[in-house]
Amino acid sequence: MPGFADFIVTNAHVFTADQDQPNARAVAVRGKHIVYTGDELGVQEWKGSRTRFIDGQGCTLIPGIIDSHFHMQHGSLELEKIHFENCFTYEQAREAILAYAQENPQAPWLTGFGMRYYLGPGLVPMTRHYLDDILADRPIAITAYDGHTMWTNTLALHQAGIFNGAECPPNSYVVMDENGEATGELKERASQFIEAVVPEPDRATRMRLLKRGVKIAAQMGLTSVHNMDGDDEQAGLYSSIEQDGDLLVRIYVPFSIRVETTLEEIEEKAYPLKEKYQSELVRGGCVKMFMDGVIETYTGLLVDPYGDDPTTYGDSNYSVEHFNRNVLEADRLGLQIFVHSVGDGGVHRVLDAYQLARATNGLRDARHRVEHIEVIHPGDLPRFKQLDVIASMQPLHAPPSVDDGDVWLSRVGPSRWPLSFAWTDIRKAGARLVFGSDWPVVSQNPFLGIHNTLNRKPWAEGMPHHHQQLADTLLSYTRDAAYAEFQEHVKGQLKEGYLADLVLLSEDIFNISPERMRDIHPRITMVGGKITYEM
Image (cartoon, rainbow, N blue to C red; front, side):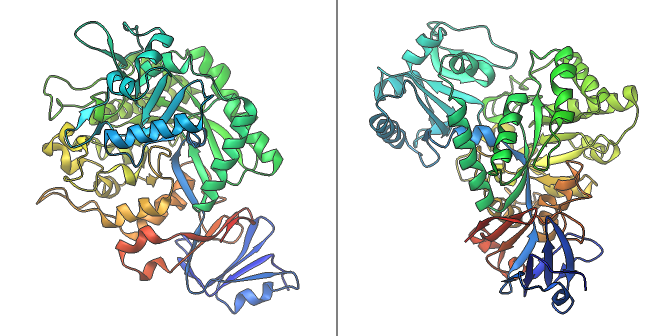
C-alpha cells in the first residue's frame, strides 16, 4: 500500500496538461505533491483515515493558473485609492473624486487609478482645468488604466515644481499648452515628479495591502505570478509575508532596469537577487525592461507611421546601443530578460538584441521574453522560434470590437489590424505563447482572459481570426507558463511528483458554451498541497 493521501479529488474532468496523460478522473495529494493521477478505482489505494475526499461533481480540475504578467505590489497598493474603472463620463469621475475626498478628509493627496484616456461622448482628454473644477484646494493625481499616463490638477503641478515643464527621461513628457504651462497630462516617466512628492505608504501599510492582494489572487484561482516589476525591497516584502504564512501564491520577482540603471547596478543589484531569493514561494533570477510606451499616447514604437498621425512613428525609451548594452550584460550574467514592447518597431529591436546576445555571449537556455506584442511585423513572426524567445501576451488587452470607443484601433490603423494581438499567427509560427493579465491594468480574473481568447471576433471582414482553442489557452496559463519561468519540471501539470498546485472549477468548462466562460470561478485553489481558497 502506498500510504494515505491528504486530499483525494474524484468525479472530476481532470485536464492534466500532461501530454502523456491528457485527461484523468481523480487526483491524490500527499504533503506538497501530487502522488496519483488517474482513474477513480486506482486512487482508492491512497485512501486513509485522515484523507479528505473532495467530490469534483463533474467539474473541471486544472493545474494552478500561472499569470505570466502581473504587478502584485502595484495592484495591491491601488486597492484603497480612487477607482475609475466604471467611470465613462466626467460626471462619474467627479462623483468618484468627491466621494473619496469626503471619506478621506485627512488624505494629503487624492490619488486614483484606472482612468480612461477619453471620457464622455465628445471623447475629450482630461486636463488640470477639469480637475481644478472638481477640487482645486487639494492635490489630485490620477493614473490611466495602463499606468503610462497621469493627470493632475494645478495644485499638484505646483507642489511637484513642474507647472512650467521639466526635463524628462526619453519618450516621456510633461505636456505643455501654448502658454508654456502644463496641461496636467504627464506621459510615461514624467509622473516621477509627482511620485517624488506624494507620501509613500509605510511598510506596515504595504504588507497589509499585499496580503490583501495575494488573497484576491488565490480567490481568482492563481497559484503563481510572474511579477513585472521589482527590486530587493519588494522581494523582501514577499519573503516576509511568506514567513508569516500568508503568501498564497508563488511569485517570480525581477529586478527593474530603468533607463538610468547602470551596467554596474545590473551586476551589483540584479544578479544577487537570483541567489538571495530561491525559497518555496519567492524566486529571483530575472530582469524587466521597457522598450517603449503604449499605443494610446503615441509612445509605442512602430515600424511605419501611426494610422491617425502620419507624422510620428512613436519612440523608444532607449537608443539601440544603450538597450543592447543592457541586454548583453543581463544575458552575460545568466539572467532571464522580460521586455515590455507593444509596437512592431519595438518588438523588432528586442529580437535584434536577443539575437546579438546569442552571437556575443554564446548559446544558452535563456528563455528571454517579449511582453505584450500588441503589433508585430510579419518578418518577425518566425524569429521567436528561431531565437527561442517566449511571447508573453495579455488576452484582455485586445479591443473586443471596433465599436467600443477604444482609441487603440485608430492609432495603429486598419492596415495593422491583421497582425494586432496576433495570438494565432504567433502560435502557428512555433512560438511558445503564454498568457497573463497585467493586473491592475485589467482584471486579474483569468477566466475573463480565457473568455476573450475563445470569443474574439475579427475586427473587419476578411481579417484573420485570432480566437484560441480552449486546450491551447489552458496550456498557455499552465504548462507553458511554468516553462516560461524555468519551472516546467515541478509545476504546471497535474502529474505524479509535481507540486500540488491545482484549481477545481465551478463547472466542466469543456462542456459549456464559450460565451459562458466569463461566469466560471474557482471552487477550490490549492498551492503546494495547501488550500488557499475554498468557496
